[in-house]
Image 1 (cartoon, rainbow, N blue to C red):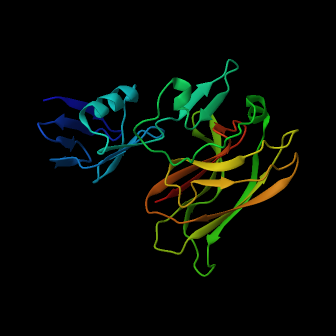
Image 2 (tube, rainbow, N blue to C red):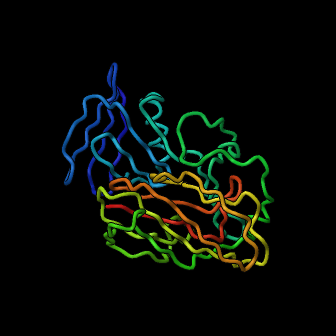
Image 3 (tube, helix red, strand yellow):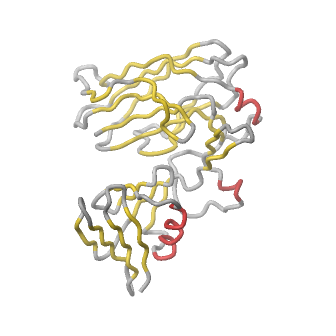
Length: 265
């Protein structure tokens, strides 16, 4: 029998044990104590390093998660292991600037097999790298409300700027909301093109991690330099989720733009 061993961030031990016809999961420690005799579906997020085994969602705590991910692929078939953001590339330029590139498996020579992503297919015409790198986006503020305006949303934390939501990437939080069975919500986000040039063609807001809440991608106009635009995001909330949307042009994330982030607890 072969297996995969790691720890979660709460100090619990995780063991995936390959048996003759199935894979068992043993999760034990200070906050976990259960056994799944046969894992039917394991969801893995490469961006957040979060695993969901059908019972609990937990974040793994290891120095090199790729080794664990490769080992999981060895013992789990493609129908059992569901991967998100597998082709997300975090790249650094010679000047130390961080770029996030969704669907970047083709840049690594991969065929993109196995795994799914909440990002949609890339536009056919790609803007130049220089145009994307020089684009600037500033979030001026937002208003988050119930779609029918009859029921108040319960905020645990109000919307506002965040120092770092992803490695090297600043963000803007749409708020931390308390989970409920309310109607869909609307986030009206004011954004400004603070650069010296118009935004590239095919600029969009794209979900790069977590539940897309009904918006895998939102097409935006090519806003001129200095202009302010309002984005209306009609969101269907899910319980206990974190969602991330990035301003993109083609397959490239605009590096000088905040990542929109929302949490439901």
